Length: 289
Ligand SMILES: Nc1ncnc2c1ncn2[C@@H]1O[C@H](COP(=O)(O)OP(=O)(O)OP(=O)(O)O)[C@@H](O)[C@H]1O
Image (spheres, rainbow, N blue to C red):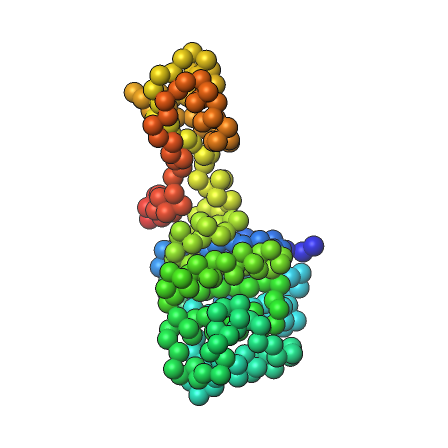
């Protein structure tokens, strides 16, 4: 099946500023991809070019197997813009009905339930908090039962519960095979839900890949005492600093610890250690600036 998003060589210049400078990437069907990068890196401009809201100077876009310029390509795409405002005199249900009509799909209040607004369906949007408006924006993005959802900063106004709700929603979408492109400054959020990450800097792709590809192999730091030769052999390859033993690779932690305890090793601490996505992002941005 064709990719949900296929973008090749996208460029966009605003006067003297090269906002996007040759960006290519893909989002597979059912894949959740995070778009990360510092302010001004070009993330929103890339999203606008994908959706036909900004005209690329160069490059090509395919959405769900059709050229991005073909309006039919956008029929099964949901979009939550970074900045938006709905008519304050409409109720949440009316906003949804309006967007269902615009998308030529039957009106359905299910998306309000998915974003936790079912009990506010008949309240006017003008009285909604920022977080509730953002939830409504997400509901609108889901109204046409999309196969691809593009979310530009979907949780910027949400409280921790709202963010956790959105994380659950993204995982539900992935289970249904819906592809998601997520632009977020909340790196922890991206790290938790994304299958793959594309990092933009100065309008270019500075790095991309799955989290293990970007962050390196998993390491395990163990603080141990009373190690026999047999216990050292069980650890396999390790580096040692005093009582700290570091092993890397794919480790079945419970099994390893059970074996060490059987070998009479005293286990004081077990810490997975891998650089965080935040550290990796800072490294990439600092080395590129
Ligand atoms: N309509 C516009 N007119 C002029 N310059 C623009 C316009 N839109 C974006 N730019 C410039 O293009 C560059 C990329 O902006 P963009 O909004 O895509 O970045 P971003 O990565 O989404 O940033 P942020 O994280 O702050 O939202 C910036 O230098 C910005 O000033």
